[in-house]
Image (cartoon, rainbow, N blue to C red; front, side):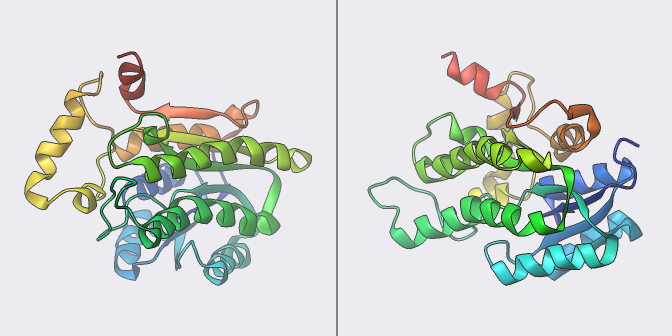
Length: 255
């Protein structure tokens, strides 16, 4: 029970990595809130989590929605101990592409979801957080490994990694630690946004073939690391990036 009676908010906790983190937090004794834009998936997630978590619908790029999320959590549970700014990733219907053809509108949407949302989630959570709390940001190995057509996404996640360092300095006086989990390929519904349905299994196997441990990650792999960063066991760790990718980035950087 490493998070016994801790109050947590997990944005994008209605599926995939976010739901995996929320489940692990609940198992470790935490209470709190998961968020998502889709009420149906949010309700389905809450069926797994039981009465320990509530769901608040909202768009993490919208200031009013963020205020609703954190104020609502505070009113239900009290001050927040842990924030996991997980919402982000690929945007359904907008294919990533080269700088030669990836336009301004697509650029803005990806930056809003992956950079602006992380910044504003932290900023709006702070008035409702306990001193000595923990903030966990979510990034991607795309920040470190250049891939054709992924420059905007990679830049967005590199910014999130930088936030962990800068926010940690900003919040030293409140002893709020900020760290970042940098993820490799994780088995979540995001595959359906990135590749056609008939190619999903092939894409997963392809990633597994390039991952030293021989498989893609599971949400539970990320959740285990998130529990550590949220708990007092990591009290001497801040501004740090922990890579959860089965050795993928190490292998590729050595090529």
